[in-house]
Length: 439
Image (tube, rainbow, N blue to C red; front, side, top):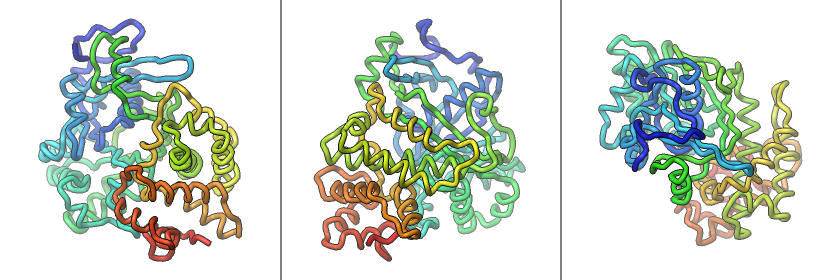
């Protein structure tokens, strides 16, 4: 039996506490992968459980039909399995109403963005989904492509303006430095080229707040689905697995209505930057280092790598001695306690977070995770042995027989194989733009 609205749930499984049938969709989410389903959709589900209304989510997959095939036969329902050493807790999430596949339903995606009930368009498309060139500006040729987020959002905004509807909040939930400002700048470039008459309306009516998101969500395995099915008594093809920790920090700058996420654990703040920087340089920087160093030492999962006595000191030094000093922390931030919490999370044996998953898209992640820290210290005449060790491990990874899932894969392999690999990767005019220059 497949999970659906009529599936009787065990008493131990939390179900949505609201009538899904009468909730309008107020959010269109582009990039509805496992992370969104374990993070923003859970906060939205919690907000509707607490009494908010009309914040159902229309999910959009830009290319693949996999998530639509998982969720649509289940009326958008799915379970979240939260795992720790103490055991597993299941809940059913009802926030997602339907999933559209943009490659097959382009007009339906545009119509959803343009709908008068829609107030927020959010994104988890990964760093490469923003289609930035080496200089950080929009690759306009790529942005005009059939699977570009800009194609759909631009057309949806134009339709809203033509209909006299209000502007939207464009909410990036990806690991980009200043993700809100970055998305706004990229969207303006696209509109200037394709919908110049919409640009002024966009500037005055729309908002793009920055966010910081944090929750570890490994890829769901067949074994995970089987274990969840044994508890549910029904097959859930859309199930996601995650940790107990979750954090969402959002700049309080919206174009119109929004869920009261702050009542269910999100933090609405004036400035996201200190939280974002700590997460990128400490958590994400450590994650990438664990991935490449751990894979090089034969490990498969994060908890195995952090338990390796040759790796843990490198990761601790990266977070405490290299990344933390570069962060202008907010008054309430305790970076030493944050490092302690991260080490505990990495060591969670119940969460099988694959290093290969973290190792994807290295060229898109490394600049903000490692190179900004390196540049900060280089300007002060100091080196970073842990990050340098991580870079050496990344180059070894590029030279190995590991599959490379990266938009620059072929160029990276070629550069890494050359005798002057560091210069070709990081030097002036190298593949990875940065203020840092290798010695």
